[in-house]
Image (cartoon, rainbow over all chains, first blue to last red; front, side, top):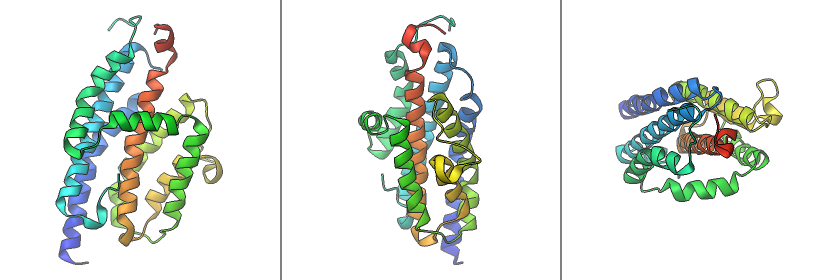
Amino acid sequence: MVGGEERNYDILRKLFDRIVPPLTQLAGHSHIQPTPAITVILIKMLAELLKALAFTKKEINETGFRELQCPS
Amino acid sequence: MDPDTTLTPATIDSLLDPGLHVYLEHTGKNLRDYQQAANDSWASPMLSAQKLQDLSVKFDEYSKEDPRLNDSLGPISFQLHAIGNTIARGAGATLVSLTQFSVRCPITHVLQRLLLGISPRKKYVLNGIGFLLSVRLTLALSRKLLISPHLADGRG
């Protein structure tokens, strides 16, 4: 594997790692029967997940992963 | 918050706004528009199942392994799977089944493909679908919360 591709994998792993915490938090709470209070917590988690997805998608598009460009 | 407090769609909108704003700012995509389209086209479990099945077919086209990429995506896949199961149960559907994945659980099928491997030359497909699933599951969960019984009758 060439060095550049190696580096790409490392960067990609770091970018994906950013998504895992909010997803894990969400998955851990999503099985709870929603009450208004729980729903507020879940929606806030969703907002955080959207932020993580936005930052990650932006960085992937800007980092030069031509073969990894998000289609949507 | 009082457990009996009514949670309105407007309140949920305001809670989601920070995430939606950041997504628009960094990607140029307004998920409010996308959410309406998603609500229309992913309106039923059967439609969702068909769309996810279509995505899984795309994965079938690329079967070569890429362990490094799969390794990176493993934790994401695991959590998406857990959330997907929750959504399917909440919808009263049988979209996800660990024992019947090949026929009745397209979410599982797709995520399994994420773990099994994909041609390095087609990474963009995997990457794009990973995001697609993340965003759509996020929106689907939002929608599930919006139509939860306690929202309909205003009780917890």
